[in-house]
Amino acid sequence: MSKLGKQLSQETLVLRRPLATEKSALQGVYNFEVARDANKPLIRAAIKQLYNVTPRKINIMNLTGKKVLVRGKIGQRPGMKKAVIYLKAGEKLK
Image 1 (spheres, one colour):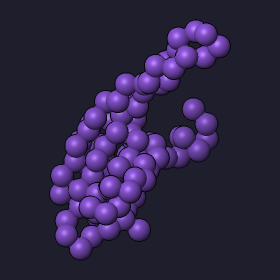
Image 2: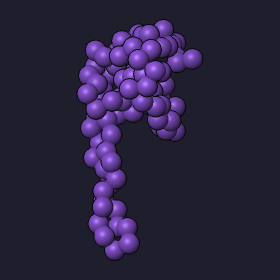
Image 3: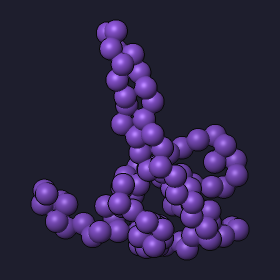
Image 4: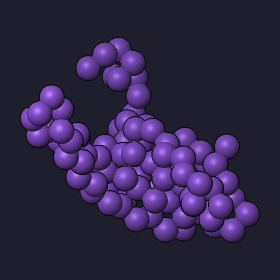
């Protein structure tokens, strides 16, 4: 682990990156790619710590990677774990 990784807490390492979609932007829902070992309490704590808002509801999905054909051979893209975060009315991430 790098020096930066040692300085960060467990909560900040849970959220990998935001996933921006048109549907989620219209509905006021936020999507994040999260760590494979993340669970709802860890994700809730990370959102509270980083964005200072309390999630109303959190849904988690394990997405499998798509099968692809590369140079005549079948391969597979890596999958990911995705969290859908619903906030209280009037709140949004900064």
